[in-house]
Image (cartoon, rainbow, N blue to C red; front, side, top):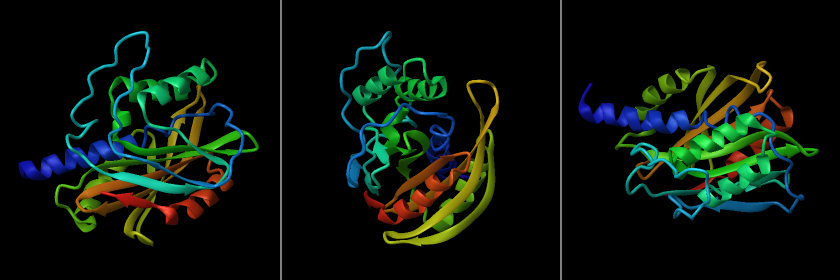
Length: 242
């Protein structure tokens, strides 16, 4: 394998591995008051905001914050979904809300803050049903390294399959309004706070636009039917700006 291909595999692998970051979040804090359907967007690489923490944040790794990487993404969310702004300040506030009620989600947010990986997210939102958390959607992005979807697919699928707890059930091409996407369907099994296994359903959509690969991943608690139906309704609204 050439050094170029190894670099492409490493970067795509880093992007793919990020979609497991929201997979083990367990239950989530109660959502804010319902609001009308809105289009939520997040720009790439938000400027860091001062955050009071117990210790300084670790220096982000190069793969967690690709240099010069551009790209923004937006989804139109139904009223039962709430976006979480991917900035240090917003995630710090989320940690305050979580408190000790959700150790899995707290650990995930701590990882995102400590290694700077949150800067590789273009979008993150949680879904609720009757006040109960049902799942989340996140969008990550990374350089495609000149690869088309045909060239990226053989790299993406093995990386998804190697994520701990993931079992790939299907992969296929789908047409979205913005273009063709690779849809990878899988389940991810993680340990809950009580030590029991938590099985969640994931739908990962990979789109390449102007040499930037975007992946949109829906993670639904216990294959929640409402979450999966919402995912089907939300994904056609995807808009990206490389």
